[in-house]
Length: 287
Ligand code: 13P
Image 1 (cartoon, rainbow, N blue to C red):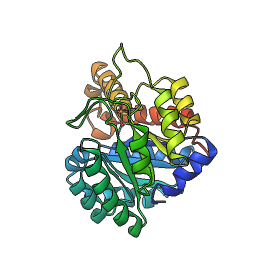
Image 2 (image 1 turned 120 degrees about the horizontal axis):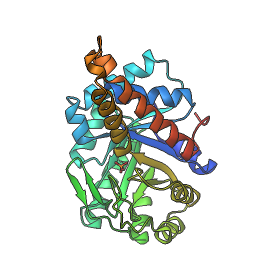
Image 3 (image 1 turned 180 degrees about the horizontal axis):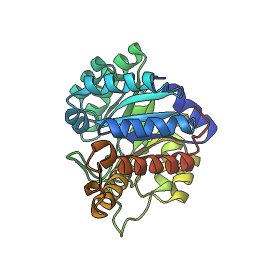
């Protein structure tokens, strides 16, 4: 069931669990995530970065693929098609293409400009019944060429942006995209608590879900995080399983070169990663 992310996030916030956003790259990724969401009766958000959208030939292709899979696979749980770290132009493209949720990442702009652009997009998203995520304080690390330094957001700026009527708010609390370095100091719960205090009921988004220890995830959820983004971890799981298959020479046995066989272990590994995350986030049986 393709929906905006609004209701699922409000339920998550009230129920003290988080909905996973899993980024997609192709058909195998999408199918694997949808299969597990249905199996565990969990709501899910499919994240699409601008780079991944381009890779899949454009946002229209992505929206059409997800909608068709939702129907053909008889998915009964709520599924949102969400632009991840969108530019201003990218947001409009995704709205046109039929996405049900957008993220406008104006965190690299001065706060006034971030507010101005977010405000305009909130108006459009609300009028069309789409959910919209905004960001304050950039998330560190690199994703699809977008590099952030990883700063903690200013709680007052978070309030200013939350007051614009966004559906959910991503705020930097020391989280970064990709693998965490060995000297990572962990999430700043002080910052998270201060943001929560300012923004009240606003569902908060934790980016960089890959590699955050379970106890930190649980604490973050208890402090108002209702959406957690995971991308790299599925990529690593896919890569590791695919490497094993090739290194074991399985592609050389019988019809092991058949792409459906070649990609199967990787897809299975994505499924297990998504299963583990859904269990950790507490969203099973909430769909
Ligand atoms: P990771 O790649 O670190 O899991 O981060 C995903 C993310 O935050 C997508 O926006």
